[in-house]
Structure formats: structure tokens, C-alpha cells
Amino acid sequence: MKNIVWLILSNGSKLFLFALILFSCKTEPQIWKVDSEQQVISEYVESKPEFSEFNKMLEATELNSLLAVRGPFTLFLPSDEQMNAYYAEKGVTSFTGFSEEFTKQLVLNHIVGSNIETGDIGLGALRDPNAIGDYIVSAFVGADII
Image 1 (cartoon, rainbow, N blue to C red):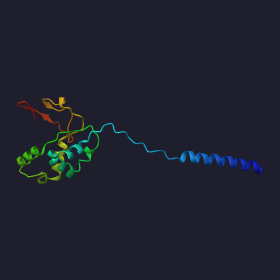
Image 2 (cartoon, helix red, strand yellow; image 1 turned 90 degrees about the horizontal axis):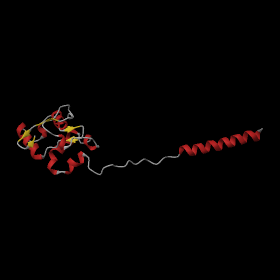
Image 3 (cartoon, helix red, strand yellow; image 1 turned 45 degrees about the horizontal axis):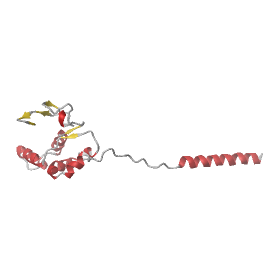
């Protein structure tokens, strides 16, 4: 009887050891394939010196992390020249002349949470609202869409 119990324990131990080895093996990490080598929006803005003022606003409001992931997002990106004209209109010299909340709203006003192609922009409101829930409206001024 002792031999039969030992044999059962021995086979059970072997089975237990086999199961332990089998289920304790670590799997290799899954490496995600990048579908696109294109930059995300935050990288694009950061890499272009003509948008440095808006990039500073993105960093100051910490919204650059929002645009550091693949969207779909559309950013209506003003140049430094356009930002400076806006500052002059508002009577400030930089975005630091605005409150933090106003600066954040200003950035969010330029972000749409969907992919907007050039052909999607016509006269009137865009089909999707911006990040603060407003619809961006376009109008023709001469031959330009504003």
C-alpha cells in the first residue's frame, strides 16, 4: 500500500511540477506595430519654429500631452505672426498676459476631436464642434476662407 501511495504522490508531484512549469512561463511582451511614421500633432508643432508661440501655450496648459497621441484630431494652428496680431488686438504682449483658464480655453478652441480635411471646410460651421463644444464657423473674405 505504501508503494501505491508513493507512486500516486510521485506521479501527482510530477504532474504538479509539469503544470507549474507550464503555467509559470512568462510570455514575451507584445510590441505594437506603428501604423504610421508620421508625427503626432504635438511633435509637429514642436518641430516648426513658426508655431513656437502656440507650442508654448500647449506646454503651459499641459495640453501638449492631449495632442501627443494619435487622434483623430484636427488642430487649427495659428502661426506666430497670427498669435502676435491676436495679442496686439487684446492689448497683451504674450499669452502670459491672459489668465490660465483663458489660455486653456484659447488652446481648446483650436482643437477638433475628429479628422477635418481641407475639402471638409466650406462656408459655414464645421460638421464637428471644437474641444469646448463650439462650432467653428468659416466665411469667405475675398478668395480666402477665414
